[in-house]
Image (cartoon, rainbow, N blue to C red; front, side, top):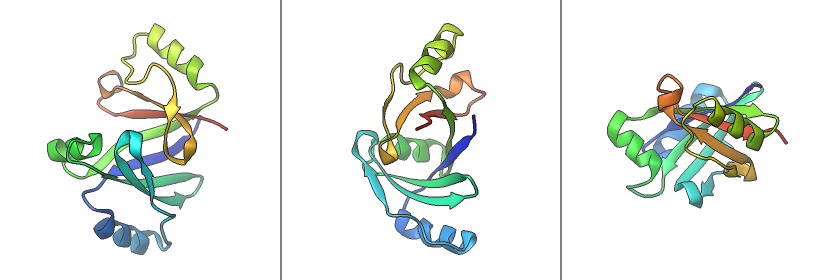
Length: 131
């Protein structure tokens, strides 16, 4: 298991991407829209992991709701797992509250699922199946 990426909720990619490009000394990858999650994503490679800036595509998107409640900042931590469906079944048996009981498609076409922050010390966890 490793940290795949940190997701950071931002109000505007147009304003925030240049800040991170300066901070990290690199250009962001191409912006990707993930319609199912109502989000636009700009990514940076940081060592073996990534930093993803997340901008909601509508006022009622999960990222926009997060920002309205908590402000901009770290939205989630993503970890890789070898078998996502098996991991979800195991976590559910162990009493974890899952947002997704089955894998779905996320940014980059990866298979993902979310674990509710109430089960993980207030941290939204994204699980990503290793390719």
